[in-house]
Amino acid sequence: MRQLRLTGYAVVQLLLAIVMIVMVVLWVAGLVLALVWVGIAVLAVCIPATRWIANRHRAMAAQVLGAPVPVPYRPHPRGDLIGTIRVVVADPMTWRDLAWLVVAPVVGIVVSLVVVILLLCVATGVVWWFLTPPLMTARAHFDRFFLAYGRTGQLEQQVQHLTETRADLVDHSAAELRRLERDLHDGAQARLVALSMSLGMADAAFDEDPETARRLVREARSTAGAAIGDLRSVVRGIHPPVLADRGLVGAVQAIALDLPIDVRVGARLTGRPPAPLESALYFGVAECLANVGKHAGAEHAWVTLEHADGRLRAVVGDDGAGGADPARGTGLRGVMRRMSAFDGTMAVSSPPGGPTLITLEVPCALRPTNDLDSSSPRTMPC
Image (cartoon, rainbow, N blue to C red; front, top):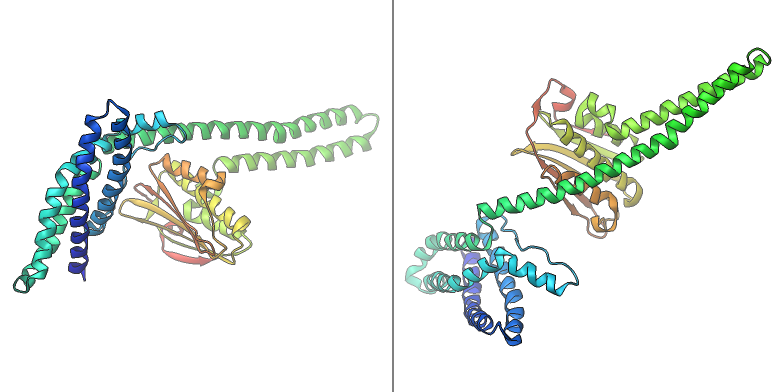
């Protein structure tokens, strides 16, 4: 029952309000004594304790409002005490927490007492039933106002995030260019040099030894075919032809057909995303499916593609052993970088024993298309 759950939150907030009053006193003492080491020690205890209490209220506000209230603190440098202190002091959320800590106990005590008293009084049971949801919702909005970034803070965070992801993308692009240069130098270029040498020797041998010349020409043809194959591999790594010809759905189905396990592809798209985003999502799905084939030990896998609420979502799942962790490999981290460059996200759920679910999501608008293969809903076993 929602009213009882909200009343439980009110009781918790009432108890925390008492703790918060104590924390305000400690904050004042710490700031006053900041010139001596005692004050620094007090603040070193107050800051993490305040953040812990604030995070509990963020979680309750998210439950009441039915919308996430993210933890907005800036990350701390590891192993650097002075750097950590600088980050904490410069973080605006530290001071927003402090402002909330001063005001919130009064609001918390008033709202919580009203809710609890209305429940305990038999004559006010009906009032409690109807008044508790709006009271607790108002309290949740109050907490979110202080404990989440405002519009300016959100824009600053977004700019910082975009700056970091663009830098990662530039580094990734530079690495890709070096890889392409290496592939061309060691593969196609070496074969073309061998081709040129074979043709030169064949030309010199035509008059004196026609059989040798013919053999050299046959070798040259074989080398030319291998060079074409190398060039196709390089081009496929830049932008697969199947992606340009058949769109995202067809390209993902082509990947699924090449895997040695049963893969089902379900899609509901009414158009095609912009080409750069389509390519990023394609390579992200390809990396996830490659990991399924190499590491998961799965018998079945599935891919779903859908567009809703202005976001394109791809979910790759398998019934393998689980345990996928982006921190332990470069493949998933590369997928995360690709998604971040387009303000997208990657979520990994892979408990030991499976199943593994990797969700790639990116905001975009689809372009209308007449390609029925890419727009019609279907589930295809591969």
